Image (cartoon, rainbow, N blue to C red; front, side, top):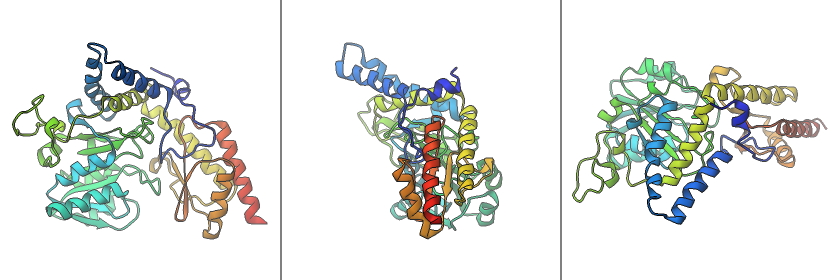
Length: 370
């Protein structure tokens, strides 16, 4: 087991980085793991490829350890979108989801509906996706509900356990990319969990997974199911897909990418998600306190049970440019979209970063009061 300090010491991003909801800079352990696997691939020493072939089982074990799913219920995916596409194209019936979900969710539902004509989306109005809101829109034709664990724009942490209680045995599909690795969520209440590893897990692009419950495996059709998704090592004839999660793959995954994700998730497990979550929650509170100090409106939730690592600042429209310029001029990395600024911290967010954030707020406050 690692201490939080040992885990945090494995990252060395430049001070001022507060954009983990966009992409998480890689840590030393992941970089060294990738270099080791690439070296095996470069040298091609006799028998060395056996290590590469073990990475699929390794990454599935790592994901299973964090999510609570069994390893055979997990399949590697190159990103969140691929997992969501697999899920949506496999559904027959009505799917309830918000029109404000991240496009990976909405596009998957729309494309499946257009292409196959068997999925029928029902669009919720933008706003927090809550158990009570979902309950009001459920019908006999609703077979699945899709939701983001953490909303990418508002930072809202969904109550997936409460959602499960109101939807009964309908499928629950969760886009977990904005929370996986930092939110101690009850993942097994969901039927499909899809996530990439490029954000909070800090495993880089080209990494992700899809975990499926036994109920999902019974009800979803593996539409995009390639030769790698069978029980035969190299099928010479067209055969049926595997019975488990492996059915939802199209080709062999990159073992180097699998190793990166496995290493990152193993590192998280060595500390424990609750420990990481508590540390990030403290940093989020500090960001909110700084915003309050300089009278910068916070539109994301302040309640710990409704937030993860994201703080959303929403100044008056005529002050948005001043705020973004102040952050830029002080070297603070954030995401600015439309009328908001999204700030996101991790365990490695340093005191120097907080000082840079404070300085940018000082400049902003000075500019708007002149």
